[in-house]
Image 1 (cartoon, one colour):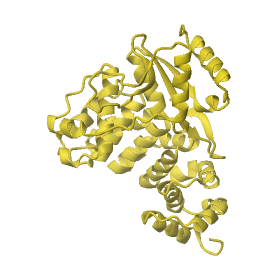
Image 2 (cartoon, helix red, strand yellow):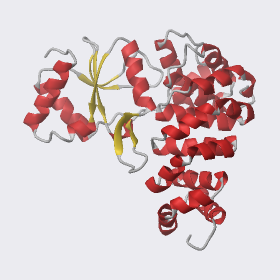
Image 3 (cartoon, helix red, strand yellow):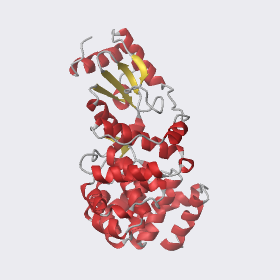
Image 4 (tube, helix red, strand yellow):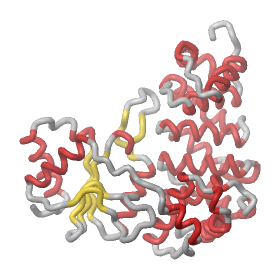
Length: 352
């Protein structure tokens, strides 16, 4: 790393990531020399660095902070695919990058007009994951519907559809959503992977909560979707919260479906809920929050999926109480846990 040039080093880490191979010493040196690599590399080099780290699931606060500091240059000098891959990397690792996404939003017309369906869909997905609402990106995509057609890759179609509903843009871009939905339903059920099917079901649920009726999913695809299982295992902390709620006299069930007869049993299940009173209690672990750009630490900023689920439940008439794992970690004794939960419920207007 010390004697190479940014392009050669970027190509090397890209190769390791493509093969799924972690090279601890190499990646550690890249992180250590991130400022020099970003300042002397070109947009493709920089994109390859962050893409490689994200693909392998490796944290690199120094690298990602320097890229964020140079976000304007990267977006203006890079091509649509490089910009999309960079946004994908930040979203995949759950890292806050307000400047990067702001500059992408400013260049939305260029990205939609010049970008491939893959670049557009990856960018839309990234906005949804981090929870940054993009008005311009979807406005121009709405104006260029033909960019996404029946010849498009299924993942592109479901990514954009998912982003629309997660970012609460269903009503504003109903025409675009219906266009994408029609394309997805016309595709061969055999090409659907589990991720595509999960996205499709969430799109339908969120859209209906917004008052938008989408055509039914084709029967053959429905049969395939019904085979998907959801991991409903509770964490140790969730069990602690549930036990304390029971001791407080709050009657509830765990892993409660907010809708009847969901095609994927357990999807969007509420951690703890009293169905009679329509009160939902969600224990939010670390995966519900974004990471700080400079330190890599978990922040209190919710990601897109967490915001979207709460909005979905509220539109179905539920009262939502979110318990942040960071707060729960501060109350280790049973007595303080009981006081904390009692105070939280009362402040939310829930009578015990």
